[in-house]
Length: 354
Image 1 (spheres, rainbow, N blue to C red):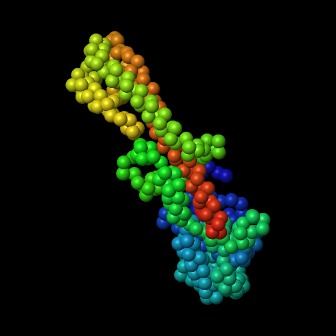
Image 2 (spheres, helix red, strand yellow):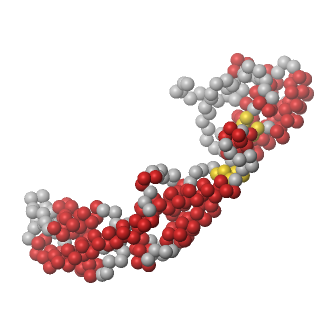
Image 3 (tube, rainbow, N blue to C red):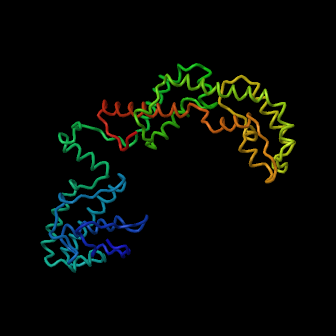
């Protein structure tokens, strides 16, 4: 295939082999396809023609949407009728039909072929991609292992929402209040969380069976994270009295780490450290006392303030402080299984696999 794009002439496009046509909106795709259809029916195009004329039942046109399918079917039917009339009259004002008439030697015979094609248009194979696939599955039900009668559903959102709601009822309602409160952001109720899961589900994240965590891991995972937080809080309470002097005696760059902000940050973190641990929420200012952050704020020839607390904060910030991934991974596995099972039960096919 040539790397150089060629100007498209629908009446001279070779009709053998594969042809790629690139076109944006409003550039005449429907016009081109309808013109190619006429050429295939009558075997027109000179050296670029198909070896023999084809019948309507031998031609397949596939497009994306139902609207495009209806437009194509109507345009093809109209073109066949108008070209047939032009053949009978042996004249036309339409530039497309005029060029086609110049190639037709026996116009009476062409009119007969077009009349037959016009009568067959109700059975013409003009489908959406998914409509054609469903037709092939139905026609080859034994070979494909599919049911004879299956309904194609283009929108699976209701099925997915029902599967999400079922997952929520089974696994989220029974959670202890403190686990549910820490696992879900405030204000994120069932509807919002279901919407988020559906979006992730559509992304088709691949799941390995051995990576699917069981629901019984939620509680121990949450409490383990809480223990980590409680440990850091205790370390902060034990060391907070030393921080001002430690930082003051270091080579910290006060243009980037000024004393006024330092006092505010310490107050906010101290308040957090005194709270009972029942969520994953961390104060934004905690990062300011990580070893990495302090190193970045130290003058080039200065000595970086160091303390085991700063290292502990580094480790805390590096770890994911949520069981969200556990919940989502399990949810995706169950939602996909539920949707697939429900579609099998109802004899339905979807356009995408959840």
